[in-house]
Image (cartoon, rainbow, N blue to C red; front, side, top):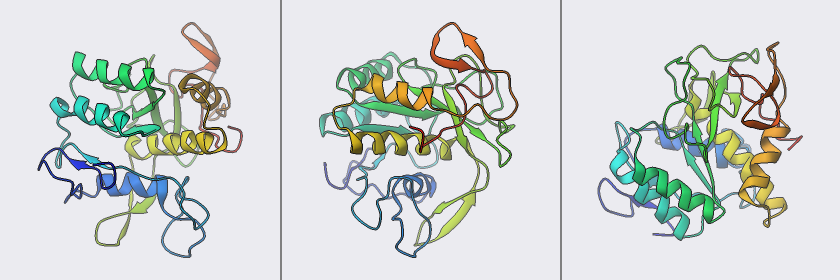
Length: 243
């Protein structure tokens, strides 16, 4: 369904869920700006159309990795420009192939690094074709729960984030799940300025314009071509204006 999305759990086009997680992520991306209601999403538009979302439900209490590859392929086939993943599943060759299919069709894939405080980024964020996003505190330091390491690309705020919930509500929550959609939103804004940008060009812009915050030591590092990098923060803090 290229209008209402798809629920892979119930096999229907009613993608609503009893879990607020997806609604929270969606609000960060697309809540309307300057309408005097609730919050302002990063790519929600100035009380106009803004970005359009196509929600895919691949689980309620937890994601189902066995259907994630189908959801990615379906999203690409109906014409999305950015795929936002706030989840962790077991590594899978089918998912790797679906992500490769997205990249070959010029679709950005963004995923959170996850919340174990581990020195390795979770999958599928660890896939080199995915932009892996960690979380920062209000003081621009790595959040203690935010996974980090070699595969991390950049960070965005992930502590005490306020966004949309179920039944027209609003809640505050923390997690890398809520940092990643900020990066997806900036990717969408870049496409709104220049729809001819390639996936690699969008990634280069976002990574090379990140702020070197938090007092960390950022250095030139092999495998990280878009500027100085740090394993705790990646290229640094997302900077929408600079991008």
